Amino acid sequence: MTDVSHRDAGLLRVDTDECKGCGLCIEACPPKVIRMDESLNPYGYRTARYAGAGCTGCGICFLVCPEPGAITVLRAARPRQSTAPGQQARP
Amino acid sequence: MSSEPEVTWEIASSKPASFYSTYERKDELQHATHYCPGCGHGIIHKMLAQAIDELSIQDRTVLISPVGCSVFAYYYFDVGNVQAAHGRAPAVATAVKRSRPGSIVISYQGDGDLSAIGSAEILHAANRGEPITVIFVNNAIYSMTGGQMAPTTLLGQTSTTSPRGRSAAHEGYPLHVSELLATLEAPVYIERVGLGDNKQVAQAARAVRRALENQVRGLGFSLVEILSPCPTIWKMSPVESQRWVRDVMEKTFPLGVLRDHTQAAQSEAVPIPPPPLSMIPGIVGVADAGLPAEMTGDADVPALDLQVRVAGFGGQGVLLLGEVLAEAGLDAGLEVSWLPSYGPEMRSGTSNCHVRLSREPIDSPLVTHPDVLVAMNEPSLRKFCSTVHPGGWILYNGEASPEDCDCRGVHVLARPFTQIANNLGDARAANMVMLGALLEIAGNLPQSSVDSALGRLVRNPKWLALDETALVCGRRLMREARAEVSHAG
Image 1 (tube, each protein chain N blue to C red):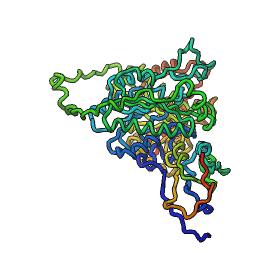
Image 2: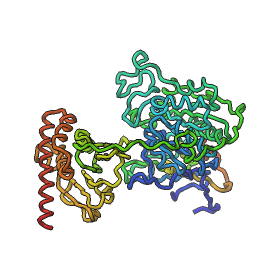
Image 3: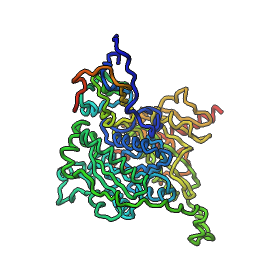
Image 4: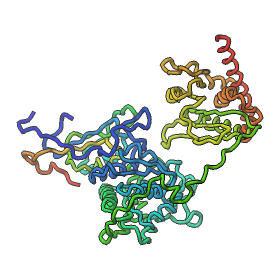
């Protein structure tokens, strides 16, 4: 993702080879920043895709995902310089 | 791009270390599990692996895999693994825990496994207070076998064996295993959780971790029942099935802690390990007893010792071919074994079977180095060609074996058997043409035994006639092939 907002507390990576497109992460994501990709992976599944901004790094998508390594959640390592109010959506 | 400093990222959640990095179950798809999209097993596996990581017990954990879709848990968890017979996981777990008291033993079971065939094992393991952890995955149906009614199936829920919905009058009420076990005195911790929404999933992860922690602390028997979605068999989307857990299943199986004696429970001293195996005969007083007398061969029984592997796609009659061969051997008075082997996945599949015929008692039904390989398609040939015993035969359903297939040291009969069968009347008789060729190799097996076996297994007269023709044709193909070889030689 090249368009990651540096203000986000979290970042999401999806292994599109492992994802089976069940959509549970999309349903679970509190700020609703995961979408279903239109294209198919080599196994014929549409896969989850991070919208590119707004991840809070809560990690619930990782927990509800049935594949062991399809989702990796990252968090910003150090405090952000400025916090824009309302950036961090809450469930 | 921006004047503000770059953010560095650290990994917050990723694949737990207690999983293997790749899964070597099959040559293909080694990066993904065999579970269907949206399957609860994957989610529960992840919770368990995370808890194992967090408690730093990977090196001393032994996971008991059940029978069911999660039968292959041992391909995913990088821990000690034992796979148990259907329903027997708590008994196996008991044995492992007692023989290796320092290990952390997890019995992972589905509702078909635990609450039906294994209801006695779980009841007594709980009643004995075995200090193990049981993960009970309840999806209210038999999923791996295609959706039959389970003891846990809800009232009104349809299944292939309760097509009009489960009725209390005919099939009884859903079995509440956790409540049942909570009436016993010994269990320390029993909780029912669900995978119905984010909150439930988070609670389930906490409960799994707690159940493991109890064992690390040596407190006693812990069980977590997890209401888990099965989108494929419930015929719902993954999200719909998740909601069904929360909105429907939970009404029958209320969530909550049913037993928590962890405060009062005493941490048990590690028991003394059992004596070594070599001392057991002396202890039970059978040290001098001889082995049973050897069985002697019957003069009428044909001299034959044959190990066969038959492999192909599901639907090609792979299993029937093996069954006819084994039945014919049985009819001729031989010792026989027939072991079907096919995957648990509901999507895609290949099947194969192991057949042994022998005058001597058969020690194991597994055929790892066949004398004859019947490969009904190319993937099967590639998979098994290198296992064939030197000097053995490969019967391959194709014009010629692929050039990059190493078939050195073995005889190959490659013919388009499906096409040949089609010319005889039906492509589906390809298995019987191949069996005919195989019988020519196993020359000592009387034709009368084959006829009687075929008559028992193929009831439809039309098919029986076609199969008999196919057998004759197969025998002829093999005789011709052998004649060619001897001419050439």
